[in-house]
Picture (cartoon, helix red, strand yellow):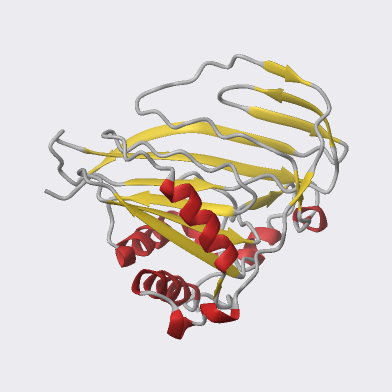
Length: 270
């Protein structure tokens, strides 16, 4: 029987200013900084599709984090504030219990390095498929360049994949790192990328912007992202292969009052 599928998107905060105050809630994270950046964490959202499983339905859990900044210039910085992402739990609605914090220092994202040895001819089968399928999809869109394979992102993805405990409920949790991140479980290698890209069917080019239902697609296509690193772990249960893909620079940056930033980074089909 076809295993259930879980997809998770992560997009993380990019801000050029130091955080002066942080208020954390289990379902909403608000960060007040001198550029008025605000991050909304939607927690978990559960819905069903038509694929039958032993439970009689397919459950897809999506956790997302979108970033709001005041200008495109701010959005392109490589300085980020440390953030955390709560574990996704099926059929759970978090309460909004606030926890106050004081001043937090910023950390700098190191540019992901692309090893010369990571040319397509030296990638293993999994890596070649993931890179090729990403670039096939990106080539369908106006002005979107190919991604290059990053050994730095690959190592990060593999280290995180190795920590996955393969729970019987298939729950996934974001790494909370400094890169864009897509997670999936239950697909073949090619099928993973196809599923992420398939969200294009729900993307509204007449009203560009972040949506929970299209976030995997928009990170995959994000024009400003130039490097990719993916890894996997085989789980001996109904969920099968667990896949982690990291992107640099991160995508899904929302610039308040500037929809042109999304139009530029998620262009239409050729």
